Length: 195
Image (cartoon, rainbow, N blue to C red):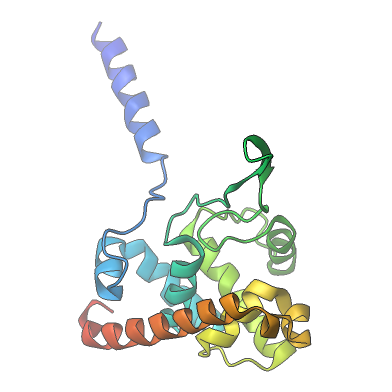
């Protein structure tokens, strides 16, 4: 009997270790609180900063806008006639809300075939890769949260064409991202001891 109980406990322990924490931090308005609550975020953001040069506060502001730091976030469902489910609005998934095609391109180009969109380290690295491309293709500074977000939303070609200019709502969202980035930057300076 004790062997059966031991085996059952071992299975429960292994299963509980395999679950990812994809829930949002409790205080989304305080960068220091986010990193204190989720230390693995800090490691991921710092790794992306070292590898791609994207400041932590810019990464955090865009992730907030895209998923509110929820690892398994998805776009809402589409409905026909207001009641018949017709699938999701897009294939966007995970912390960075990366689309299937863009995620596949990232995995090919970075040779990170096992990357998962619900893993903060991979999502952060994806954003670093994408923002680096925005800099190279469209001349957008890695620290310009507003322009990086517009590139992220419209795609590199759409941004280059200026498609965002006719979308007042999107420009307003990009302004919000820039403001949040500035707040996060100031907060991170005040809690530099956790760095």
